[in-house]
Image (cartoon, rainbow, N blue to C red; front, side, top):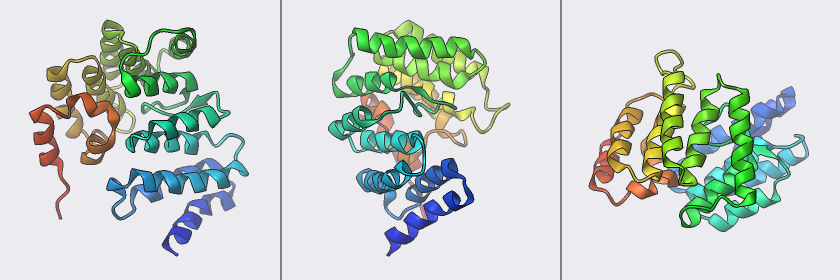
Length: 247
C-alpha cells in the first residue's frame, strides 16, 4: 500500500500537465523513503516502475532514465547500468550535476572507467567526449557542462585537462553568487582529484564540499562510486564518521 501511495504521489503533477515535474517527484519520493539510504537497488526498482509509466507520458523520459542509471551505479550493478544506457533511445541524459543533458556516450565512458580503470580513447569514446567538449564550447557560460567535461577527462586519464576544467568551473560559479547550482562544481572538483590519484587535494576540497549546503553528504559519500579511490584512506572513514546522521 505504501508503495502504491508513493507511486501515485509521484504521478500527481502529471495530472496538472507537468510531466517533467512528475519525474522529479518520483525521485524526491524515493530520496525520503525510510532506509532509502541503504537501499539503492530498491530505489532503482521503484524508479523503473515509474519509468515504465512515464514511457507512455513523456517523449523521452530522460530524467527518470538518468536516475535509474545513477541508482544502478550506487548499487555497483554495472550490468544493469550498461543495460539502462544501451536500452535508452535518448542521445543525451542528465548526470554529473549538469544543468542540462550531456551526450549518452559520456556516461558510457564513465561506466567503463568504473568497471576497470582508464577507458582508451577509442572511436566511440572519443566521439562522446568530443560532443561534450563542443557543447561546453558552445555554452561557455555554463560551468556545469565544463565541470561534467572535467569528470569525463578524469575518467579518460586526461589529468591536466580534468583538473584545469574542474577548477575553472568552480571559479565560474561561486557558491556565494549561486547557492543552488554553485555546490555542484564544488562536488565534482574533489571527485576529479580522486579519479586522477590526487587524494590529498581530493580531501582538501571534499572538506569544503561537505560544509557547503547542497554539497557532499553522508549518503553521497557512502554510495557515489566516484569516491571509491578514497575509501581505503583513513581520512575517508574519519569524514564519514563526522557526517553520520544522528537523531
